[in-house]
Image (cartoon, rainbow, N blue to C red):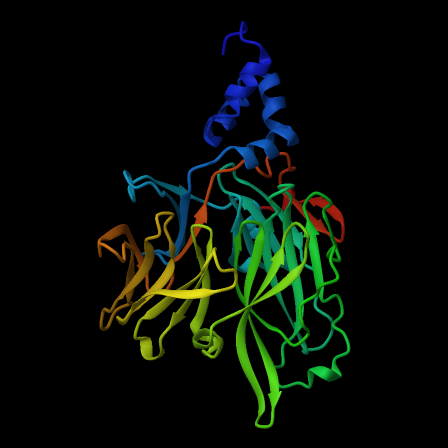
Length: 397
C-alpha cells in the first residue's frame, strides 16, 4: 500500500480484509503488524466485520480411522466444493479423550484431560492455529457430583468464557438433603486467566441433571437438562432447557412442550438454525426424527416444523439457508458401516451431497467463521489456578 496514503485510511482498508490476508500482511511492515496484533483491532474486527459462515465438519476416515477436520464455505453458489482441511494447534495434543463442547465467534473449545488426569479445556482458533489451555477445577470429593462444561464468547466484550456447573449426579438421591453444592457454578474468563463465581446469584436448581449438549445463540448458552417432581407415585422426571447469559451471567429456564418434556432424555438433542434454538427428537426404534424450533415472535414457544420417518438418519445441524444436515448410515454386512453427509431442503426435497465418506455415526457439524481472536495470546499457554504457564518445550507434533 502506498506510503502516500494516510495510515488512518490504510487501517480502514485493512479492517475489511479476510483473516488469511491479515495474517500475511503482518509480515509486510511493523506498523501493520502492530495494528493487526493490537487487542482493540482484534476486538473490533471480531464484532464489526461480518465473516461468511462456514461449516466445520469432523469425522473419522473409514480408511485409516483418523479424525479429520474440514471447513466448508456455506455459500449456495459453491457448496460444498470450497473446502479447507484443518488440523488443531499443537496444544490440543495435550488432551486425551477429548471432544468438541462448543464453538463461538470462530473459536472451538475442546474438553478432555491432560496426561496427569486433570480436566482441561483447550480453546482453539483454527484459522490462525492459536490455542490456549485451561485447567478445569476438580470435582468435590466423592461420587455424588458430576460436571457439565459450556463455552461461549461474550458478544459485548469478545471475552471467551468457560462455564462449569457442578450438579448432583444421582437422580434418586433426596435432593432436600443436599443443602448446597460446593462451587456449584464457576466461570473462567480469558481476560483474567482465572476462575471465579458468576456475577449473578441466580444459580440453577440443585435438582437439575445436565446433558452435555449445549449451543450458543446471540450470547446465550443453552443446555438440555432434566428435573423431577415428587408425586404420590414417586418422582417423575421431565426435560427442560437451562440458559446462561454470557454478559449478565444469569441463569434461566425454558419449559418444553409435553411431547418433548416427557420424552426420554437420551432421545433429545439441541442445535440452532440461523439464530433460533432447535430441539431434535429421535423416534424410538430408529424410525426417524422430528424438529422443533423456538419461535422468535413468541418467546419460549416451540413449534414442530417437520418430521422425517426413515431409518438410519440423524440430524447433525443446519446450513445458514435452513437446510438440514443429515448423516445417512450405509450398512455393509460383514464390513464396517459407513455414512455420508447430505444437505436436505425440506421444501424442494433437493439433496446436496457433502462428498465426504465417513465411518458410521462419527460425523459432527458446527457453524464456524474465521476470526482473529487469540491472536494477541502467547503461544502454548495453559492457565491453571490463575497462573499462566508456557508449555512449548513439552509439546510434540
